[in-house]
Length: 169
Image (cartoon, rainbow, N blue to C red; front, side, top):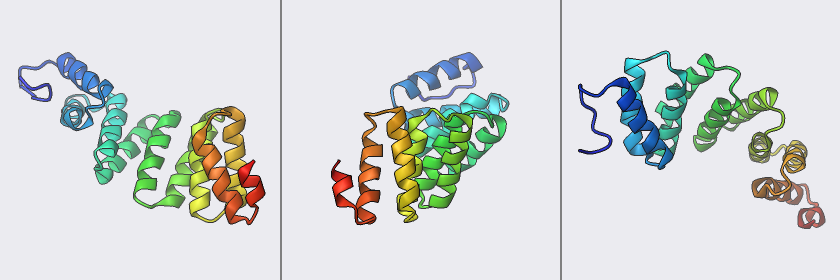
């Protein structure tokens, strides 16, 4: 039997275990329909919305990912990771201002998460707000001195500000 086969005989617990196992194995395409079914059966389980949204993002189903992650952030407005995932969807669909707003919300919830700042720096670079990108990149690096994305975004901002010497440092 395939792992993503859904039977009427499957219990909610069996479906949950199967979906979570597939998710942990990065088998997002296989996990996606199981999370869809779980949401049908237990629409108040907010975590399944986040996992489904992430699966949809990973399988390039951005419209569905957006819908599901918006629902998740409404259900769990204090979870910064829901906003992070939604911001990633917006980045992939070139909705940079909306992505930036999601990362700002994530920062408001968890100001110590370096990834929010790094992604915000990316957005600022895309919007050509290089001073803000420099600040966000530096904050990310303050929180995680090994954050390669933040280093890259900082360099991009410095180069665009015609400050190449600082980009090299």
